[in-house]
Length: 157
Image (cartoon, rainbow, N blue to C red; front, side, top):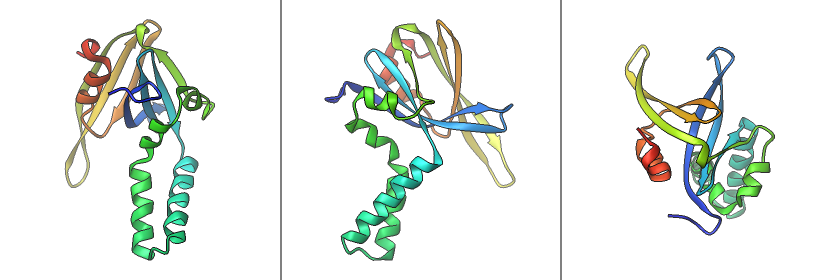
């Protein structure tokens, strides 16, 4: 599934806790054969993509609801833009982006954790990446196991 930029997989909407778990940063994992790039996604980046989608729809003469639909699609499909970018461009896109060499990844685990609120239980997934430099933890609101296995094959436990 490798594309012309060497990207073998993308996993969007990963959250990394900071400030004792009260705040988190959003990342998109962009994997190549040699490295895993963690690209930070900021609110300003999302706003920019949404504005561009709305302006493009408006320029095409689309009405209010079509513009709104374009904006929603842009925010949901934000991570797909990395498919058309080079790994160098992704790495340098934001100062908080970082990489892990795939050779340094020892194992990955995805564990389902349930989150309870007033009305229902919703699944959260905790992803632990064991590297030669230590552990990294992320959360996802979807089951990441299929994507992790596709990217990292035998390292997923």
